[in-house]
Image 1 (cartoon, rainbow over the protein chains, first blue to last red):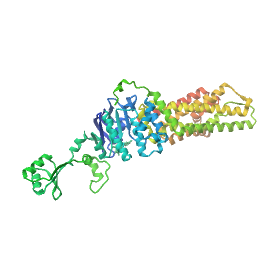
Image 2 (spheres, rainbow over the protein chains, first blue to last red; image 1 turned 30 degrees about the vertical axis):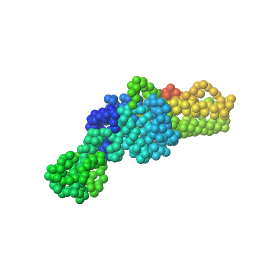
Image 3 (tube, rainbow over the protein chains, first blue to last red; image 1 turned 45 degrees about the vertical axis):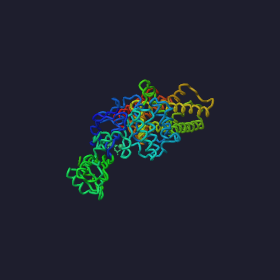
Image 4 (tube, rainbow over the protein chains, first blue to last red; image 1 turned 180 degrees about the vertical axis):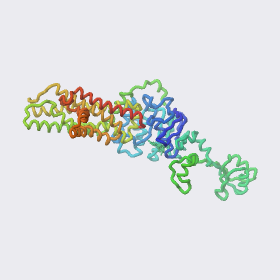
Length: 314
Length: 257
Ligand SMILES: Nc1ncnc2c1ncn2[C@@H]1O[C@H](COP(=O)(O)OP(=O)(O)OP(=O)(O)O)[C@@H](O)[C@H]1O
Ligand SMILES: [Mg+2]
C-alpha cells in the first residue's frame, strides 16, 4: 500500500505538489488524473525517492522507498521510458537492474518475452521506437515481481494492440492483489481500467473516489425521455425543479433528478413515454468538470475561458 | 502475488549487487571498449615512438618504464572520458533516474560506479605498463635494464595513477552532471594548470601545479622523486579523488535526481 502524507514539493516559488494526503490500496488500479503540470509525475518521483519532498512523506507499506533493500522486488516503476542509456542492449539494461536487486537472470528473459521484446533483446535501446521503449520500461517494472506498480503514462506511444495489452496487464496485476498506480490523459482508457481515481489540480487533491462515484457525481448524468407529448411533460418536470433540454421534437434530456422520479411525474401527468433511459456521463465529462478551474496551461479556445483567467480562478 | 514472499530470504543486491549492475552497464556500452582501446593504442604508440627516438638517438640502455610516463600522459584522456561517461552519460539520457530507482542509496551507487571505474582503470594502467616493458624490450633486447622497482612503477604505478584520476573525474562528474563540463575541466586541470605554472612561474601557483593530479604522474609512473616520491604522489591523488567524490556524494544526496 502507498501512503502520501501531506506530500509537498516546491520548485523555487512554484508549488508542484501541495499537501497531498491519500492512500493507494492494494488489489485495485488507481488512476491519477490531472491537467498538464498538475503534479502527477512529481508525486511519483517523490514516491520513488528521486525527488526529495519539501514537506510530508510518501511511504510504501510504511517505509520510504530509499529504505527498501531490494526496491525492484517491492515496487516496479515506469516513469520515463527514455530514461535508459541508449548504448545498452535491452537485455544488458534489464540484467543490470536484475543484478542490482538480486533478481535471477532468468527473469530478464521472462519479462522480455512478456512484453514482446525477446526478438530485439540484443538491440541497442537507442534504436528503439517510443512504443518499444515503453515496453522495455514495463519489462523493467515487472522484473522483480513487485507488489506495487507505479506507471506514469504507460500507454503513451503504444499501438492499439499494446494499449489493450497494458489494460489487461494492469487489470490482472490488480487482480493478483497488487497495488497499481497509473497516470494517464486518456480518459476512455482510464474509464475502462481504473477502479479508483485520484484527481490532482495544480498540485492539490481534487478528488479521491471510486471511478463510479466520480462519474455519478458529474452533472453530465441525465435521463433521456421520448414522448409525443413533450411540451406537457416539460411543464411538469420544470415545475418539479428539474432541468430539461429539448434534444429533438419528441425527445428531452433531463438532469437533476433520479430516473424514478421522472417516470413517476410522467405517470402522474398522464403523459405516455416511448423511452426513459439513463445517460451516464463519460469520465471525460466528469474529469473536465472537476478540473475546469485548475487547468494551468489552457489553450484559449472559443468556448473556454482564456488561460490568464483560468489562473485567476480557483 | 506470491504468498511465500515473506518466507523467502531476499538475497543479492546490496553493494555487491550495485557493483554488478554498474559493471554490467559500464561494459555494456561501446564507449567503454573504445576508451580502453584508445588508451592502450595511444599509450603504446607514444611509448613506441619515444623508445624508437631514444634508441635511434644512440642511448645505449634504458629501463622498462622510461617511456611509459609519456604514454600515460597521452593515454590518460581516454581514461578521463571513460570515467566521466560512467556517470555523466547517465545524466545526459536520464538513465540516472533508472539507476537510482534500482539502487536508491546514493552512496551505494557512487561506490559501485567508483569500483567499476577503478578496476577498469587499474587494469588498463597495468596493461599499459606491460606494453611499455614489451616495447622497450623489443628495441633494447639484452640492453634493457630490468629492475623490479621500475616494473612496479610502470605497471602498478600507472594503474594507480589512472585509477585515482578516474575517481577524481567520477566525483567531478557527479558534481557537474555534464560530460563536456567534466572532461573540459579535467583537461584544464591536467594540461592548463602545469602549463600556466610554467609560464607564470609564480611560487604559490607552481606549488599548486606540482600538487595537482598531473604533478603526481611522473613520481608514480617513472619513480622519479621529482618533486616528491610515489608515496606523496599517491596521497596527492587520493586527496583530489576524495574531495571530488565527497562533493559528488553530497550533491547526489542533496539534489533531486
Ligand atoms: N525539476 C523541476 N524544476 C522546476 N519545476 C518543475 C520541475 N519538475 C516539475 N516542475 C513543475 O512542477 C509542476 C508539476 O509537474 P509534473 O511534471 O509533476 O506535472 P504532471 O502532472 O506530471 O504533468 P503532465 O501531465 O504534463 O505530465 C509543473 O508546474 C512543472 O513545471
Ligand atoms: Mg507527467
